[in-house]
Image 1 (cartoon, rainbow, N blue to C red):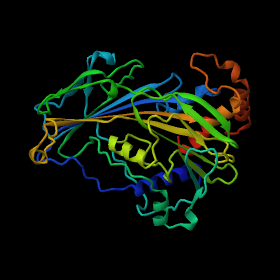
Image 2: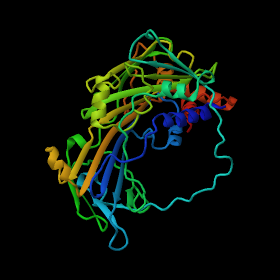
Image 3: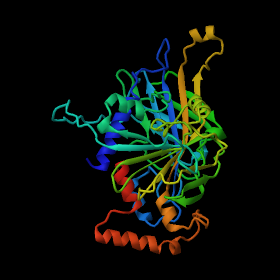
Image 4: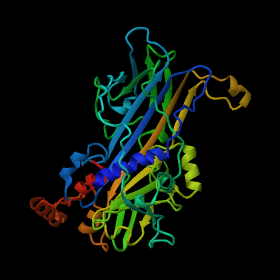
Length: 421
């Protein structure tokens, strides 16, 4: 089985580990409209990168070569019927610099493609995975933990792979009896500007809402600052020590790295958690309570932390390794009327609408280029406005030579191979 297929099989099995009955935690006597704003800042941290053009093939996941990228995803669910053709819009503050309003449209129904073959047909994935954890210069006692599917049942695999389970979040989605709309959409699909700001008044109105949704956002719930690498030192034998600039509105950080042994094909996973945790459920939006809980359990790094270290030798047999990094923003939950503090009053409370604003700032820190393009005794970070051409000929010539000889050795191509792009 190829690395890509093995990785996809891992993800499928991991999703089973976290399977929970899909019911909403938002219970009320009468259903009400729910509005979600998902806000992300993404920045690819690749000092000394020699293959800038290849970044386009990864789309918006890493922000691209033009610096930090901001994205906004708006989702609305309403149990009310429209008075005519359904229409709704989100009036945005001037600081967004994207016009006066963003239309919320019902997405076209997806065609259901008939899948032929036996639904019960299943191929058990075969792989061996080494798991390391913790920020330290040396591998700690009791590590790595080895997962070998040839020697484990599905139940044993599930127990070994599962980590802390964050609270399930149920964003608005198409559902029977409800109207669902979203932005971006076919009517207005545009990039969020680099200097856009969400600060100010937001108004959502439409003919399938019983009332106008109106609220204000402040500094704490504006687009988060991008993840910026301050330095990366070390190599695959000595280990890597990397640091980042503090993000003012972050409430916690988490990092993980995954690669494969080029000789044996076994997978290698490292996480920044001080306690054993695979981190599968942590590379996404988390609630404020979950972040606080995971910091207390020493799984998520506290907001004052600005450095971490991958132990020596973890990736010594891996030709490529990249760190996935996330900074969690402060989630905002609003209702109209606000939820009462008195438990008795809360029993009678039935909101007219609810709003959830969730934020994160993400990055991919690619370690092989750091090692190849920079000496550990010299500064590792190159500012965006500095010319990088003079530092790249060696790496570039190697990539070209590998391409001409048929080798698939570039960091981006290896990333595609491991993560399935």
